Length: 172
Image 1: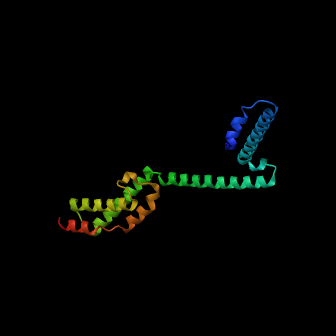
Image 2 (image 1 turned 45 degrees about the vertical axis):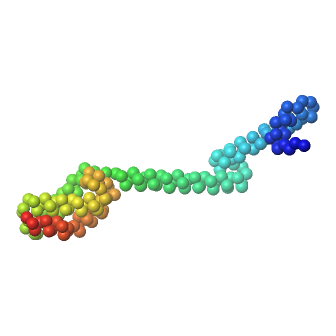
């Protein structure tokens, strides 16, 4: 006794000849073609725009899929837009404004505390720039992005020299 699975039976049956074998082969080919058509139709319905589907249930299912696809695309577009906006460098005009505001803040501090020593001025300038870079989270001013502008403005308004810088200034 031999045991055959469906594939084994089909393999052997395709080798038979005669009227019954031909009937089997024709039915097998017909079933295969119908199955292929069902798969194609399912694929077409799946990828067909919902408004083109006549069956209301299939139309509704496809519409829901379209809405989900739309939501995914919309979320991706929003993220891409945010990524682009977050990485826009500050304009040269904004860079000049920032530099001017930094100098104004430094000069105001220097005049209030009557600091004229160039080494002390350099230490304070370094401290102020370091505070700006730290607030923006970047290693150099040229890497400041548009998204950093608000935190930089806040850091500039609230800047006071660090204790370390104040100690170094006393040494001069």
